[in-house]
Length: 126
Image (cartoon, rainbow, N blue to C red; front, side, top):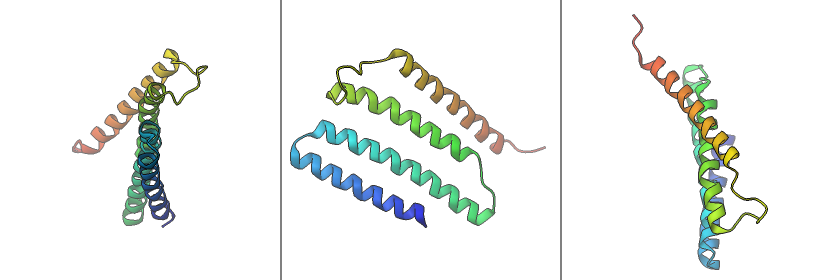
């Protein structure tokens, strides 16, 4: 139940950010804030699905943590370049290729883990 309440609060925050951005004319910065909020909604959705599955079956899958990590990496990979393009970052915080490469590597690793886990569950057991 707390996850459902948190989801509604985050969706409300998303709507407030969109209306604030449109009203103030700062669409780029509003887009950044809204995008970050949408990724939080995605994470909460994944956690709610896992909680429902646990209540119904009594089984908790570790894949939920992999999905949350993937969503977090995606958020960072998408939001950082948009922040730079919109001028939301300070001049001192320029593009760091090593940091971005590590984010890509982390996303690749979590993607492989996700795929391996999904393949394992879909293969018929002889």
